[in-house]
Amino acid sequence: MLKYFYMSKKGLVRKAELYKKLKEYCKMIGGAQQLVEQLLEFSVFYGAARKEEGPGVIRKYFQSLDCRSISTEQDKFERVHIALQGLRLFQVSQVFPLIYAAIGAFVRSGGGNSRSLAKMFIRLLESMEKYHFINNAVCDRVGNEVEKLYADFCVQYEQSTDFEKTTSDFIEAIKKQVASEDEFRIRFCEICYSADTLSLIAYIFDRMSNNGLDPGERTRIFNPEKGMRRRNHNIEHFLPQNPAEKSASEPDESVAVDNIGNLLAISFRANSSLGNLSPAKKIEALKGKLAKRIHNLPYVNAFIQRYEKLSASWDNAAIAKRAEDLSIEAYGDVWLIK
Image 1 (cartoon, helix red, strand yellow):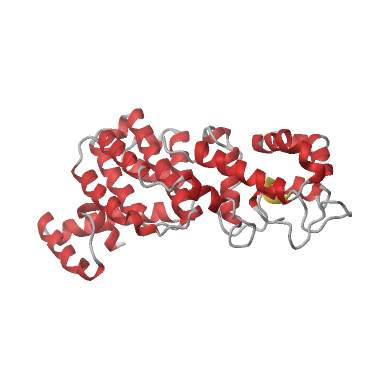
Image 2 (cartoon, rainbow, N blue to C red; image 1 turned 45 degrees about the vertical axis):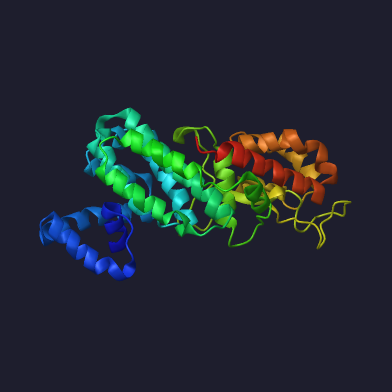
């Protein structure tokens, strides 16, 4: 936390130099009292941003800054919360000093009473979320590849009186470092169901299903809150892991049943109803008795329309095709930094 506090004010620092640099900074701002007060302010932000709590925590934080443009508009503080959930999932901690420095510039620029600047702040967070999904969550690049860039922009934000311009410059900078579509597509199509990837897969289907929707219109699929015995949505294997009946497409060791191209996120009750039916019978059920249970999941309905004709012979080729289709939509639309 001390390192990220210093970075948010003065840029990149090596751990071995942190104590010395903090002492120098303490003298520069007028002594220990001022340093402790600034550390307290940063710690409040750091706790709110890093911990998985409800959007009310985000609202309360922006209320404490008198940022009415965010704290009094539910869609805005919920969008901040949603973006932070994604960033926490990717475990890239380098984002926190930059976000804090950006908040300082946002407030100084009059963002507390400006809807347009509030939208720009949210665009900043969502751009960071998209960047780290592509480069770190999918392409598995090291998080510190942007550490210097982020540290340099911390200094720019600390000195900035034009939040909008500094943010536009930052977004253009990270666009240049986004992994290529070919790299992304290869790695995305390798994502498979496991205990370790379950949250990431839920996140992917959450963002794809809710693409373009405001928070009040969303169906929440990704829910990282701890302590729940059952969540509203489960990951469904379209070609079941253990088929109830023999078929030409019955999975064996060579069939990629756990690949993302064979997965859907649906309500746990619909998932339970589908059981181990064949893909063709699952389509029949989803179009019939379970139709009401998926009406709020547009990507599932799109899946039915697009792949129904392949359901009778759902195999590795179909799974690979669907995985590639998902990767194209993900890179070119859902996680496109605009």
